[in-house]
Every structure is written in C-alpha cells, then in structure tokens.
Image 1 (cartoon, helix red, strand yellow):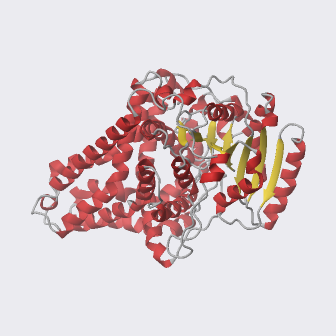
Image 2 (cartoon, one colour; image 1 turned 120 degrees about the vertical axis):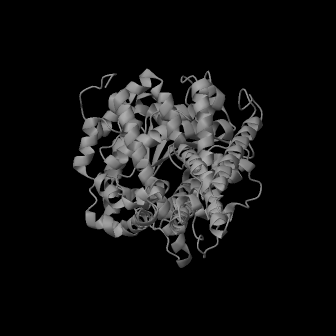
Image 3 (cartoon, rainbow, N blue to C red; image 1 turned 180 degrees about the horizontal axis):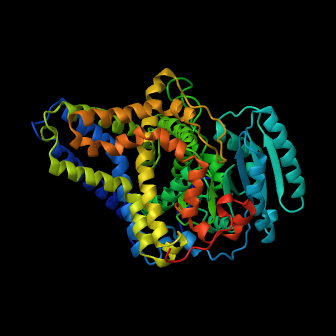
Length: 597
C-alpha cells in the first residue's frame, strides 16, 4: 500500500493541529525561560563562577523532562475539565464508531514471548478468545504465539501446552505456535518474521506481550476504529496496570494511573496524528507496516550499535512518514499489563529501555520524518540523557554548598525556594492534574476506594515516587557511564510473580546508590544543615534505596497496604467481570468500600 489518502473529514475539531502545537511549544518555552531565570537569580550571590555556570547548564539539561511533562499534563487537565467530549476533541474517528459496525477485517493476534511460563499466556488469551467467539467473530481472528524462547526445557513445556491449547480452540479460533531458535532482532525481529510468513493473510495485527490482557470488547473497538478510516496506521490503546498484591507494583500502578491519564490526553491533543506506539496492546495496519516500517540498520559495532531494542517509537515514526496516522485512544478501556513486582526488576526493565532509547541517536537524521516525530525521538533520548545531569547536580551542588562560607554566599533563599517549589510542582504535575480531577468527582473518588483512601494513597505514592525517581536516574547514570566499556543489558525474561528481595541482594545491587545519597546528606549535615532540604529530593531516594527495595517486596508490608486500601485501583472497588478468569489475588473478595471511607 502506498501513502494513505488525505481525504475525508478533518482530523481534529476546534483549534487546528498547527495552532495546538504552536501553543504547546510556547508553553514549554515560557516555562523553561521562567524556571531557568529563577535558577540564575538564585545563584547570583558573589557573581557567576565556573561552578555556578556548570550548575545552570546541568539544570538546563535536566529541565526538558520536567517542563514538557508539566506542559502536557496542564493541557491534559484542561481537556479533561473543559472539553464537552474529550474523545471528539482528540480522536474524532474513534468518537464516530458506534460499536455495532460489522467486523470485516482479518486480524492477527500476535503474542510475543521469550522464556515465559505458557500458563500465563494461556490464562490471558482465553478470556479474549472466549469473548471473540461469543461475539460470533472468531473466524475473523487468528492467534499467533510467537516464541523466541531459547531455554530447551522452557521450549518443550511451551510447545506441549500451546499445542494442546491450539487443539482445544481448533473449531472456534485458529491458533498457531511458532518458535525461533535464535531471537534475531529481538521482538521486532520476531514480528518481522511473522510479517514475512503470514502478514499478507491479514489486514490488521493486534500486538500483545506475555503480560498483556485485553478484553474482546476493547479489541473489537480498536478494529472498528481502524476499519472506519484507511488513513489510520496504528491505534494504540491506553494501557493500565493489573491489580497487584506487591507493594511496589501497587504504589507504582496507582501513580501511573494518575499520571498517564492527564499525560496521555494532553499528548494526544497536540501530537494528534503523530501519536505514540508502545509496542503492545495496539492495533497495526499490516500492509502499511510491512511496506514502510522495516527498521533501519545500525552500525554493527560501537556503544549504541547492533540490533534496535526500542523498536516501537521508530515504527511509529516510519508509519507517520509514510502518510498514515498514529493515534492513541486515551481512555482506560479494558487494556491492561502487569508491572514489575520489585524495585530490582523495575530497574532491570528500565535499563533495557535506556539502552534502546539511546540508540535513537543514530536515527535523528532519518530523511523525510515529521518535525513532531523528530521531537519524539529527541524527547525519548532526553528521558534518559537528562539523568546524569540530575546526579551531577546533586554531587556538584552538595560540594559547592559545603565549600561556601554560609548558604547565603552560595544561593539566595528567596529565588532558591521559588526555583525549588517550581521544580517540585513540575515534577509532580502529571499526577497532580489527575489527582485534582478525581478529587472533584464523587464517582471517581469512590472508584479509588473513597475520599480518605484516595488521599492516603496519593500521599503514599507521592513519597514513593519522590524516592523512586532519583534511584532510576542514578541507575541510568551508571549504565551510560559503562557504555563506553561495552557494558550492555541482556534481554532476559522478567520475573513477573510477587517475590521477596533479600537484604543481601538489595545491598549488593544498591550499595553505591546508598553511598552517594548518604554521602551528600552527611556532607551537608557537617557543613550547612540548612541546605539539606534542597538536596533531599535527590539524596533521600538514593540513601533509602536498600530499605525501599526490601520493604516494597515484603509480603507482610504488601498485605498491610492491601488491608488499608493504599494504592487501590478502580478494578479493586468494582472488579470487572472480564478479570474474573485471571483469578488475581488482589481481587480476592473483600468488604465493599464505602463512599466516605
């Protein structure tokens, strides 16, 4: 298929896409200028020496992640609160779908796995396939379990159980199991192999990971949206976390539920047809994907060479370059994933993303890509490239403050406090936007367990996220520092079930994090204790990384949060019938929440 047609109804209603992007750029520029001005004025005492200039440069490098997130969430909040119908404003094609349109497209359901337990894959697929069969559309779908499992024992169990699964479904929905002995190209190579062998047999492909779960209703909605407009190349659903008993996952998912709502809506408002693709829980137009989304080759050697890890954003950029729209459906609609159960597993997954995103340096010069697409690649890099700037700010700022005769000789209190407050507001703004929206809606408050549970959950998650962020930034910094020595992340299976983190393991993994955090606090305590509050947002998480890893993986602590309703998600207040088949421990029967609780 060539470039998609540009006819039909306008892509957006109200303000033009160009005007939206101009407004967003203006908001980012104004915020950046204002906050940098505060930082420059704060460091004015005694004039500007080399250290002051270095601190300003480091802050400017770290700032885009905060400013862009704050600007997007501000827009998202305004759309949530003031748009008559946010979906019409953001994604008109989706708003026009009634839900009764016949399913005419042939859709492949792709489940990509590597050294995963086949039981989880079967558990997550069965409700989806049951729903499709019940809707009398089973013949329009074909499930492909695409395995890159390398472990022989895993592979034998996988093949036996999935063969039996395919036989069980033979007369309702076709199931094909295929295993590659060598995982060339990782997940992107796995899907590319499917495209070469079976891609021409299908119109669309639904991409799922081993931990993905979607209902038939959610999948059919994506298919109807894609059928309605041949300009659509990718439609990405908004993915939320499945309820979990792990304290780490509960707090993380609660924060993501808040942050992603305003952030996704705000992003969709200004990015429009240049939306994101996250590689799973999304529908892809196969003819366009096969024709235009082959990943470019990277240098075989070098720090960031080899096979591309973070393929999804590149595929979205290539799809948009070909003239097709990439859209996100910014609604929490029966599309879930499982999140890591412990801090150590979360770090391991995050570093794989870090390595993948940093490979985008090679791709910034791709010819013909849209300006918004180029921005997306740059921002994906800055998500991780800004981390060393934060850690350098902590170290250099601590040493500079300690060397000053008095704190007033180093930083002005008035502008320093203003810059500090502005930074914290920007840091928390994606969650604050949804927090305010939920707090002003009684039905939403009840869904999260009631007003007081929601407030307690928000407070606990805020502390958790303030501790977690610097840990991740330090992890990125260590990883990037090791890249010149060819220390890369291996693509290994994730431990998805709840499990404890022994103290010894946490110490071995996080001792250097702790040393830097404690060191900064001790230096300031011995010199200028009044400066400690400025360092705490970065130093506290590092100093407490070991107990945080152990505590948030502890079964008793996790059970206590469950009993108190801390981190409760709407699915725990009113469990969707669709989740019954998963038998999630977090959804075990419990007393109903009262609206005032």
